[in-house]
Length: 344
Picture 1 (cartoon, one colour):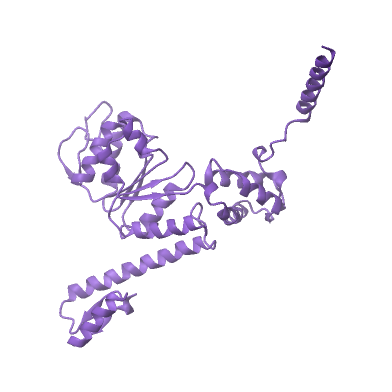
Picture 2 (cartoon, one colour):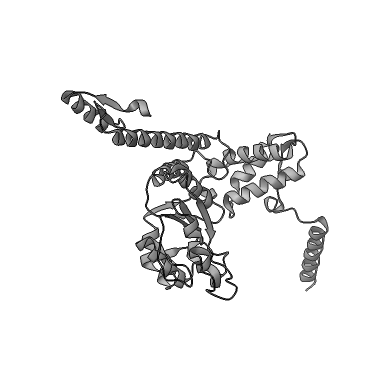
């Protein structure tokens, strides 16, 4: 990318350079290079942009089915749009919220945004809001000082402070208690935190990425989610499509997961049969990509070699796989009922 900078030494050349920048060149430099700080800043920006382009190329490899990603694989229009939005969101400092059903890969999207962003050298701290004890949630997020509550025998750094200069990912943001929502809003507005048991403000430089599988508009209508917080965290919304809405990506996902399972188990499996693939593409996938991963891992347990067939898929793909004795018992009951009705 550095070689895309234009070196100009005259007025006409500067005009040409400005025109070139407008047409897509990165930047231009004028001779002589008296301002070394500006020169270093331009080179740093060029290197940063070059890294971002290489990361985007890596994402495109995954998009083409050549990468080793998990949920972020696909050629469907929805996934093409998603990859473009991830790359754009990564270059912004604005808070981003990822919407999607359980198992669609919201955490993977948050991680991709961090890796593509200028904050990639900073920490990426993940917090599951639903998994934390409500009484200790504020201490987890903002830290506490010694003696703040029973058991606080030392001062503790919270997740926000730990994420300074990087990104914090708040998963299941819809489960955040109202009291904590108010404090999170202040962090977003004022860029400071307060440890539990202390009122001294601590500046933090953190970008907030959130995710939810809930309908936040419904929660706002019920008074369980703050409207002002919603508009703070949702500057850049990203919607992940469920797997049933991008069935054309299932063969790519299956191929990637089979390759991964083959490396882990070292089983001599060569692929999947057409019949089994048709069963997979016809499934509604309520558990989305996570469910598909589990199905492939299950098939690898049953299939010893060759290709995965219908017989290696879980019972949910075989609605008539009732034990034979149960079928016979039902048939006998049906015949007895018919006989009784005939006699009546």
